[in-house]
Length: 430
Image (cartoon, rainbow, N blue to C red):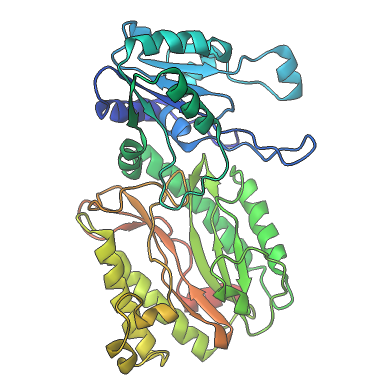
């Protein structure tokens, strides 16, 4: 890991929150992610399962966490199973967690080696009446690939058909969405690293640079600040490419007169940041570009004010749509008659602003959360309205990450990153 060690107290607190919502006499199991093969002996870089990290701080493959608050043996109330390290592994792969370092990382005293899992787990299941299984229930999840967790779930259902099965996902979606102070600090650090990348770019971008060169500048800045790199695949979209919402090719030159849409964010300690800025290639917005830019910025500022405790996200998105509707009329992109005759299921503004405005942010860029429940203080959301005009080769989206406050407007974790058109122009031409 590149990040500074995190206090084990965070993970102890997170486990306590999960345990409080468990049914009596049940245990819960969480498996780390696989290391995914590519071809030959190549693999994808390991990414820890976010729930395992959230509940234990363990950032290592082949790890299992079991929570059993009513275990007969108090030492089994929380147990880690880890890949046993050795001198050979240390030479070829680097040192793994020992039982002592696992305790310092997680606050969990009982640590077994992975080969002990079948026998210890069988003993624990003999005591339990039910088990919490950790299925992926994110609304946008693509579950085509079978995971280590999926294989475990199939085996448990085959071996223990008489046990009651419960879902971990609803509990995790609820507790992970409300951040602890330490988590907010980690997300803030990710945002500060992103800021360093943006400021680097403002001195770098000029006509003739390539989108991938911009990506390289960001990667350099992120890595030198203890990030693993991008929290998600970066979008560096110049000119008409900005009208493709998930453009990731990043292989075109940036031309004089075009605007570059940058949707990028650094990760830090597995926590994500998510930013979008739009930058004129030549250092100056045209009057039309600036008008569209300021319209999006106005919607972003007004939308942010709506993110207060008690807000229902479905209603929030409708209100943001009305804010955007007004700006599109002012820009001459839609008319009042378009609004009057619109399809309620696809309002007129959707022609130029077709995506949502906010999503949960945390250990995942599109973090887990309960969309049907009122939002609460210490939830973190993106705010990212946009206007896309393919016929003009112009796409503008602006995005910051904000923390919902108990009282007042949300706190902008990206408040120090330049966003006003004039400030961006000034910094580019300094």
